[in-house]
Length: 625
Image 1 (cartoon, rainbow, N blue to C red):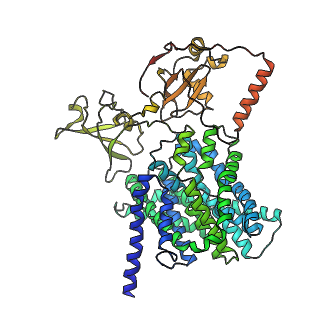
Image 2: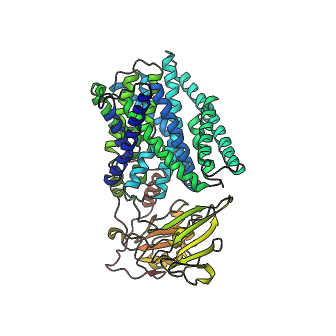
Image 3: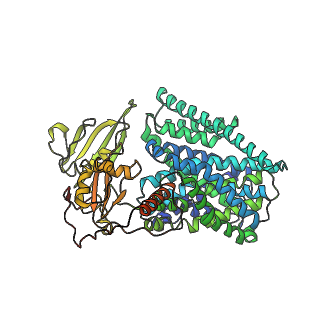
């Protein structure tokens, strides 16, 4: 017995260490990390090194706990501004999108696999949700600076779509296991009512649990070493409590993390670091267990139809579902195309495919093997193309900040302040004389081995170490002040235009200078307000607006989303690569309106701008962003 304990511990820790080392390979070559973890599990399983693991209940139990930890960390790290920015599109994808994907994929599975309709939809539900961990690892590994709107949409969708897919999967397993063959209207009614009850209870428990976690952390004076474990345990209690009363534990734990992460919770820096490490460990354990549970020798029997279904999911089911969900939102076609492609399937799909085995379904192993192959196809094809596609669609923007040397320090006994240590970077705004905001309180400066009060140091110089007291929810303006200038790639040198334009200037001056065809109402706006209106009411860093012969580029926005910097270019960017995606409702309206205007008015010959454009009367030349 004692020897077995040592042997199991040795093998288990060796697998985790191997997975951790494989992350270095993934960062080096940009490989999908989840794919490496799964391959390590497959290579160690019954068809590889010979480790036998065929306990579906243990695999599902361990995977569910790991997923709960990952979802809590995902919610904890999601800022409210990202949620507000992407709530509409992301929640539409996470609910209606999952249902549409399940239906489309289930119809294809019925004709390609030896499954009945309910079993086909069950397979569709198990692969209907996306894997956030795989997507954002690839974005970080490839050093991809994606547009914030697209990143937020993918992040919120992947954090909220798992509960929907889990509910559909478990419900269909229970119906099939009971040998029921309900009518379509009865099935739809039961699904809707069960969904509302499951999600409603999960949401209530999640909100109350999140508020309770914040209250307990602030009231109890726990040691900093014990506090992260206490919070993690409370999150799992929220997960279990919601599931015990018939609610969605996964939705509850995500909402609890969202509330706790966006509140004035104590020791937030320590909690984030601990949860980041626990999330990594949970992913590694979940992926390894699922890889060990699979039996690759059974794959050839359904290899071809499963691969065909994986391609159908990537090229038809997911894009159609994304387009239908995003029609009401005015998202550009490149962003819709990218969101539809970055629907990577991962550990959640494999975990859900275990439920038919738990339910004792006749074709449970077929469903599991098909889901596993579909996940592998998704990771191999989509996983290696995320970065190239983002660049091809023009969704990569130059980095806003250069290198930043910052250390965040928790203050003992303080719930609402932090101590930040910045090293002044050469070329940073503070090194050039920019003032530190009044709400920040510099206290100490280290220079050449000597420490002095900030008031006695005069102007800060490159290399100074500055200690600043700030509120724990301090604006990220300080990062901008202490960071060095971002190194712009030669290909992005003209990304923000050759001239700077004051957003506070009147748009009428643009009309007088370049004649872009602004309406009388638009000429009464400021240039910043005009750009914001043309962008649908919300502007973000690197957005572009074409106005006749010129193009205005958003160089910066403040914490409230107001444009603070604009660039002007006389050479509008080339159109992005054409992709097979549908128009949004906004583009449909624009094209219909343009058609009506052109039909009513005679065609006028447009003036051709000269070879050399003059310096703009309302702007000034600039070389940076």
